[in-house]
Length: 402
Ligand SMILES: *[C@@H]1O[C@H](CO)[C@@H](O)[C@H](O)[C@H]1NC(C)=O
Ligand SMILES: *[C@@H]1O[C@H](CO)[C@@H](O)[C@H](O)[C@H]1NC(C)=O
Ligand SMILES: *[C@@H]1O[C@H](CO)[C@@H](O)[C@H](O)[C@H]1NC(C)=O
Ligand SMILES: *[C@@H]1O[C@H](CO)[C@@H](O)[C@H](O)[C@H]1NC(C)=O
Ligand SMILES: *[C@@H]1O[C@H](CO)[C@@H](O)[C@H](O)[C@H]1NC(C)=O
Ligand SMILES: [Zn+2]
Image 1 (cartoon, rainbow, N blue to C red):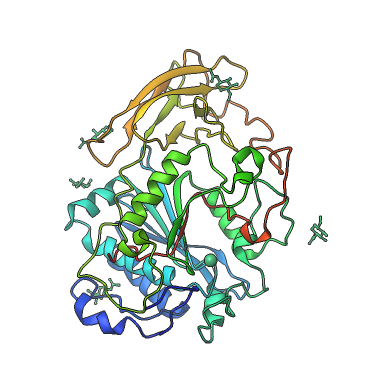
Image 2: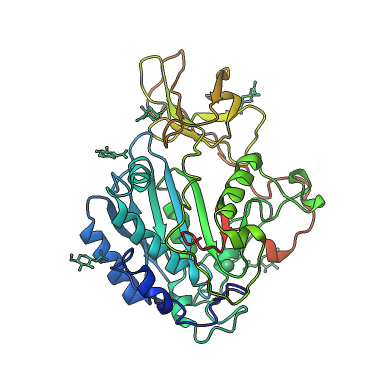
């Protein structure tokens, strides 16, 4: 199998391994799944594992195909305080098909190992995982023949590249927003996503943000870094280190050498830094409070959600957290993230502010995020590197095959 240039050379590649892997994944075969097959699989999983899954469509593609999201978690139907929300999106380029199948197999692996594998059980207990196997189902169906480079089906039905269709932090992106993009944008507002991964094809690499930038982010020195660069580099290195070929920087060699079984691609979950809720003196949770690590200025300041919750992804170390209610003095508090977290959970730290507030009493300052373009200086960027909205962009991978 070859991942180079974003496609399979042999659409039937996986049957060879079916026998070997059968005991692990009895329910899902190793073939490509068209919309109908994918839907059938997702619906059966939602039925067979109804207590830990929640299947919903976040909208429709141009051609009216459902954009399915399967949620896996101990409480799959709704957010629970203290449980971080994670999301995977694949196949936004319709011809980049591997991620779509990987996510279906990831679903299969998660649900069939709940209660059997302690690590998976713990993961399902402590994280709510949103999985969208295909953001571009029309593109996928349009793929005729894998020609391995910008094939038919990369774009959506209206010929828009969905990975260039989101608003951009650094430059004005006035392309016409497509139904798939609008559905995802709406979805993102319904949950407090803490971390995300987006699966592409075409290269064997874990890519972390930003995708473009300006002088202030370092774009002129050929990198464009986020305030959380340490965390993103750690995540990308951890991810890549679980894939020997990715780690070696290997390109396609046309040899099928999946070692036996599955690898642990989840080790990045335990990294969650610090989380908690912000309360007033009477114990009421405070939404819309800015919670930031001192000296890490984000494009959109992190704000507590409607439950007063915040989540900060941090590597072990000592940090000052700055909690700001508009119109009041910042509240500074020190946290020490231990080297080794005891369990899958982030350090929990609730913050009590010494005044009386009430739910929804804190105005959302307007605009809550800077208008674009973000920075005053706006050197030119390659149009090929316009970013998606997603926090963490992972490019191709054998997610759980080592
Ligand atoms: C659902 O359960 C049925 C009956 O046990 C089983 O035959 C089928 O393989 C399961 N499918 C999935 C996707 O879990
Ligand atoms: C996961 O949660 C279930 C139900 O709340 C509990 O019984 C179980 O002990 C937990 N398992 C782990 C490994 O955390
Ligand atoms: C987008 O902006 C460019 C330059 O500002 C302009 O030439 C183009 O017509 C605009 N396109 C749309 C769809 O508004
Ligand atoms: C805390 O954050 C607020 C708002 O983001 C900022 O104005 C203030 O300077 C920060 N204070 C410190 C000590 O970092
Ligand atoms: C896991 O860590 C969280 C946060 O530190 C803590 O509240 C919880 O009790 C821990 N659970 C176990 C089983 O140690
Ligand atoms: Zn892509």
